[in-house]
Length: 255
Image 1: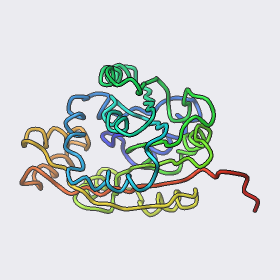
Image 2: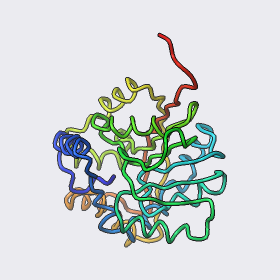
Image 3: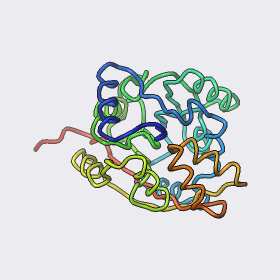
Image 4: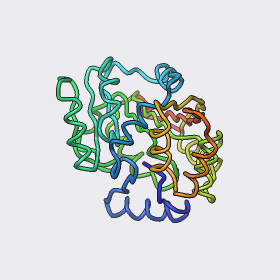
Protein backbone atom coordinates (compact mmCIF):
# COMPACT_ATOMS: atom_id res chain seq x y z
CA UNK A 1 0.00 0.00 0.00
CA UNK A 2 1.80 3.11 -1.18
CA UNK A 3 1.63 6.52 0.39
CA UNK A 4 1.85 8.71 -2.70
CA UNK A 5 -1.18 10.94 -3.16
CA UNK A 6 -3.01 9.65 -0.09
CA UNK A 7 -3.54 13.00 1.65
CA UNK A 8 -4.27 13.25 5.34
CA UNK A 9 -4.65 10.19 7.52
CA UNK A 10 -8.21 11.02 8.52
CA UNK A 11 -9.29 11.07 4.90
CA UNK A 12 -7.30 7.94 4.16
CA UNK A 13 -8.95 6.08 6.99
CA UNK A 14 -12.38 7.23 5.88
CA UNK A 15 -11.74 5.96 2.36
CA UNK A 16 -10.27 2.72 3.70
CA UNK A 17 -13.24 2.02 5.95
CA UNK A 18 -15.84 2.87 3.31
CA UNK A 19 -14.03 0.79 0.69
CA UNK A 20 -13.84 -2.24 2.96
CA UNK A 21 -17.53 -1.96 3.82
CA UNK A 22 -18.35 -1.86 0.11
CA UNK A 23 -16.04 -4.78 -0.66
CA UNK A 24 -13.83 -2.54 -2.80
CA UNK A 25 -10.05 -2.38 -3.07
CA UNK A 26 -8.00 0.65 -2.04
CA UNK A 27 -5.54 1.33 -4.88
CA UNK A 28 -1.78 1.32 -4.35
CA UNK A 29 -0.63 4.17 -6.60
CA UNK A 30 3.07 3.30 -6.52
CA UNK A 31 3.09 -0.31 -7.76
CA UNK A 32 -0.16 -0.03 -9.76
CA UNK A 33 1.14 2.86 -11.85
CA UNK A 34 4.89 2.23 -11.86
CA UNK A 35 5.53 -1.52 -11.42
CA UNK A 36 8.98 -1.27 -12.99
CA UNK A 37 10.12 1.40 -10.55
CA UNK A 38 8.55 -0.53 -7.69
CA UNK A 39 10.56 -3.59 -8.75
CA UNK A 40 13.71 -1.52 -8.39
CA UNK A 41 12.48 -0.36 -4.98
CA UNK A 42 11.97 -3.93 -3.83
CA UNK A 43 15.49 -4.85 -4.93
CA UNK A 44 16.93 -1.92 -2.97
CA UNK A 45 15.15 -2.74 0.28
CA UNK A 46 16.67 -4.38 3.35
CA UNK A 47 20.16 -4.86 1.92
CA UNK A 48 21.41 -5.71 5.41
CA UNK A 49 18.89 -8.55 5.72
CA UNK A 50 17.69 -7.24 9.09
CA UNK A 51 13.98 -7.64 8.32
CA UNK A 52 14.33 -11.15 6.91
CA UNK A 53 16.54 -12.12 9.82
CA UNK A 54 13.85 -11.06 12.25
CA UNK A 55 11.09 -12.84 10.30
CA UNK A 56 12.98 -16.13 10.39
CA UNK A 57 12.43 -16.44 14.12
CA UNK A 58 8.82 -15.29 14.25
CA UNK A 59 7.06 -18.10 12.38
CA UNK A 60 7.52 -21.54 10.86
CA UNK A 61 7.96 -20.77 7.17
CA UNK A 62 8.13 -24.45 6.13
CA UNK A 63 4.36 -24.98 5.95
CA UNK A 64 1.70 -23.39 3.75
CA UNK A 65 2.39 -19.66 3.35
CA UNK A 66 -0.02 -16.99 2.10
CA UNK A 67 1.22 -13.58 0.93
CA UNK A 68 -1.66 -11.07 1.08
CA UNK A 69 -1.30 -8.17 -1.33
CA UNK A 70 1.59 -9.90 -3.07
CA UNK A 71 1.78 -7.29 -5.85
CA UNK A 72 3.72 -8.70 -8.77
CA UNK A 73 5.02 -11.56 -6.63
CA UNK A 74 8.44 -10.22 -5.71
CA UNK A 75 8.62 -12.11 -2.40
CA UNK A 76 6.99 -15.36 -3.53
CA UNK A 77 10.20 -17.09 -4.75
CA UNK A 78 11.87 -16.37 -1.42
CA UNK A 79 9.01 -17.98 0.51
CA UNK A 80 9.13 -20.94 -1.89
CA UNK A 81 12.71 -21.72 -0.85
CA UNK A 82 11.34 -23.19 2.39
CA UNK A 83 7.56 -23.49 2.27
CA UNK A 84 5.67 -26.61 1.28
CA UNK A 85 3.33 -24.35 -0.69
CA UNK A 86 3.00 -20.62 -1.35
CA UNK A 87 -0.08 -18.68 -2.43
CA UNK A 88 -0.05 -15.02 -3.45
CA UNK A 89 -3.28 -13.02 -3.34
CA UNK A 90 -3.47 -9.71 -5.22
CA UNK A 91 -6.48 -7.55 -6.22
CA UNK A 92 -5.04 -5.72 -9.25
CA UNK A 93 -5.35 -7.88 -12.43
CA UNK A 94 -2.21 -6.57 -14.21
CA UNK A 95 -0.13 -7.36 -11.13
CA UNK A 96 -1.69 -10.82 -10.89
CA UNK A 97 -0.48 -11.54 -14.42
CA UNK A 98 3.01 -10.21 -13.66
CA UNK A 99 3.15 -12.37 -10.52
CA UNK A 100 2.07 -15.47 -12.45
CA UNK A 101 4.83 -14.86 -14.98
CA UNK A 102 7.37 -14.56 -12.17
CA UNK A 103 6.49 -17.91 -10.60
CA UNK A 104 5.82 -19.90 -13.78
CA UNK A 105 8.73 -22.26 -13.05
CA UNK A 106 7.91 -22.71 -9.35
CA UNK A 107 5.56 -25.72 -9.06
CA UNK A 108 4.55 -25.18 -5.44
CA UNK A 109 3.59 -21.52 -5.90
CA UNK A 110 0.31 -20.07 -7.18
CA UNK A 111 -1.22 -16.61 -7.52
CA UNK A 112 -4.92 -15.75 -7.44
CA UNK A 113 -6.92 -12.57 -7.61
CA UNK A 114 -8.44 -11.55 -4.28
CA UNK A 115 -8.39 -8.93 -1.57
CA UNK A 116 -7.46 -8.74 2.09
CA UNK A 117 -11.11 -8.86 3.11
CA UNK A 118 -12.03 -11.61 0.61
CA UNK A 119 -9.31 -14.24 0.34
CA UNK A 120 -10.46 -16.98 -2.09
CA UNK A 121 -9.42 -20.04 -0.11
CA UNK A 122 -11.11 -22.37 2.34
CA UNK A 123 -11.15 -21.95 6.11
CA UNK A 124 -8.06 -22.99 8.08
CA UNK A 125 -5.91 -23.59 5.01
CA UNK A 126 -2.71 -21.71 5.87
CA UNK A 127 0.05 -21.92 8.48
CA UNK A 128 1.48 -18.42 7.95
CA UNK A 129 -0.02 -15.25 6.47
CA UNK A 130 2.41 -12.52 5.47
CA UNK A 131 1.33 -8.94 4.70
CA UNK A 132 3.92 -6.30 3.86
CA UNK A 133 3.33 -2.53 3.93
CA UNK A 134 -0.41 -3.08 3.92
CA UNK A 135 -1.76 -1.97 7.32
CA UNK A 136 -0.28 1.49 7.90
CA UNK A 137 -3.40 3.05 9.37
CA UNK A 138 -4.47 0.43 11.90
CA UNK A 139 -8.16 1.24 12.48
CA UNK A 140 -10.12 0.33 9.38
CA UNK A 141 -8.21 -2.90 8.77
CA UNK A 142 -10.48 -5.04 10.92
CA UNK A 143 -12.21 -6.85 8.00
CA UNK A 144 -8.86 -7.95 6.66
CA UNK A 145 -7.68 -9.14 10.05
CA UNK A 146 -10.88 -11.15 10.54
CA UNK A 147 -10.39 -12.75 7.14
CA UNK A 148 -6.85 -13.76 8.06
CA UNK A 149 -8.17 -15.42 11.22
CA UNK A 150 -10.55 -17.40 9.02
CA UNK A 151 -7.87 -18.77 6.69
CA UNK A 152 -5.25 -19.50 9.36
CA UNK A 153 -5.05 -22.93 10.93
CA UNK A 154 -5.11 -23.15 14.74
CA UNK A 155 -1.63 -22.21 15.91
CA UNK A 156 -0.95 -20.34 12.67
CA UNK A 157 0.74 -16.95 12.51
CA UNK A 158 -0.05 -13.60 10.93
CA UNK A 159 3.07 -11.52 10.25
CA UNK A 160 2.57 -7.88 9.26
CA UNK A 161 5.60 -5.89 8.07
CA UNK A 162 4.96 -2.15 7.96
CA UNK A 163 7.09 0.95 7.75
CA UNK A 164 7.94 2.64 11.05
CA UNK A 165 7.25 6.36 10.75
CA UNK A 166 9.29 7.11 13.89
CA UNK A 167 12.63 6.27 12.25
CA UNK A 168 14.33 8.98 10.16
CA UNK A 169 14.85 9.81 7.43
CA UNK A 170 12.16 7.73 5.70
CA UNK A 171 9.77 8.07 8.61
CA UNK A 172 10.23 11.83 8.59
CA UNK A 173 9.31 11.95 4.89
CA UNK A 174 6.22 9.83 5.59
CA UNK A 175 5.03 12.15 8.33
CA UNK A 176 5.61 15.20 6.13
CA UNK A 177 3.09 13.79 3.66
CA UNK A 178 0.80 12.55 6.45
CA UNK A 179 0.92 15.21 9.19
CA UNK A 180 -2.03 13.73 11.08
CA UNK A 181 -0.55 10.23 11.15
CA UNK A 182 0.02 9.13 14.74
CA UNK A 183 2.35 6.10 15.00
CA UNK A 184 1.55 5.69 18.69
CA UNK A 185 -2.16 5.45 17.92
CA UNK A 186 -1.51 2.76 15.34
CA UNK A 187 0.67 0.89 17.83
CA UNK A 188 -2.16 1.01 20.38
CA UNK A 189 -4.60 -0.40 17.83
CA UNK A 190 -2.41 -3.43 17.20
CA UNK A 191 -1.66 -3.93 20.90
CA UNK A 192 -5.39 -3.99 21.65
CA UNK A 193 -5.83 -6.40 18.73
CA UNK A 194 -3.42 -8.88 20.34
CA UNK A 195 -0.24 -8.33 18.32
CA UNK A 196 3.33 -8.46 19.53
CA UNK A 197 5.48 -5.68 18.07
CA UNK A 198 9.10 -5.68 16.98
CA UNK A 199 11.07 -2.77 15.57
CA UNK A 200 13.99 -3.10 13.19
CA UNK A 201 16.03 -0.61 11.17
CA UNK A 202 17.69 -1.51 7.90
CA UNK A 203 19.13 0.11 4.78
CA UNK A 204 17.74 0.74 1.32
CA UNK A 205 20.59 0.94 -1.20
CA UNK A 206 20.24 1.82 -4.88
CA UNK A 207 22.52 1.16 -7.88
CA UNK A 208 22.46 4.79 -9.04
CA UNK A 209 20.94 8.20 -8.35
CA UNK A 210 18.36 7.87 -11.10
CA UNK A 211 16.83 4.81 -9.45
CA UNK A 212 16.89 6.33 -5.98
CA UNK A 213 15.17 9.50 -7.15
CA UNK A 214 12.57 7.59 -9.18
CA UNK A 215 11.62 5.54 -6.13
CA UNK A 216 11.26 8.60 -3.90
CA UNK A 217 9.06 10.28 -6.51
CA UNK A 218 6.56 7.39 -6.61
CA UNK A 219 6.41 7.14 -2.82
CA UNK A 220 5.94 10.79 -1.87
CA UNK A 221 4.28 13.97 -3.03
CA UNK A 222 6.39 16.15 -5.33
CA UNK A 223 7.45 18.66 -2.61
CA UNK A 224 8.41 15.95 -0.11
CA UNK A 225 10.19 13.89 -2.77
CA UNK A 226 12.21 16.93 -3.80
CA UNK A 227 13.32 17.52 -0.21
CA UNK A 228 14.13 13.81 0.21
CA UNK A 229 16.24 13.80 -2.95
CA UNK A 230 18.06 16.97 -1.91
CA UNK A 231 18.68 15.58 1.59
CA UNK A 232 20.11 12.26 0.39
CA UNK A 233 23.62 12.80 -0.96
CA UNK A 234 24.53 9.17 -1.61
CA UNK A 235 22.81 5.99 -2.76
CA UNK A 236 21.25 4.77 0.48
CA UNK A 237 19.21 5.74 3.51
CA UNK A 238 17.87 4.18 6.70
CA UNK A 239 14.34 2.79 6.86
CA UNK A 240 12.61 1.55 10.00
CA UNK A 241 10.06 -1.26 10.06
CA UNK A 242 7.41 -2.25 12.57
CA UNK A 243 6.84 -6.01 12.50
CA UNK A 244 3.59 -7.20 14.06
CA UNK A 245 2.84 -10.80 14.95
CA UNK A 246 -0.34 -12.51 16.11
CA UNK A 247 -0.84 -16.25 16.57
CA UNK A 248 -4.19 -17.96 16.24
CA UNK A 249 -5.10 -19.95 19.35
CA UNK A 250 -4.94 -23.73 19.01
CA UNK A 251 -8.13 -24.32 20.95
CA UNK A 252 -11.01 -22.69 22.75
CA UNK A 253 -10.02 -19.92 25.13
CA UNK A 254 -12.14 -19.75 28.26
CA UNK A 255 -11.95 -16.40 30.01
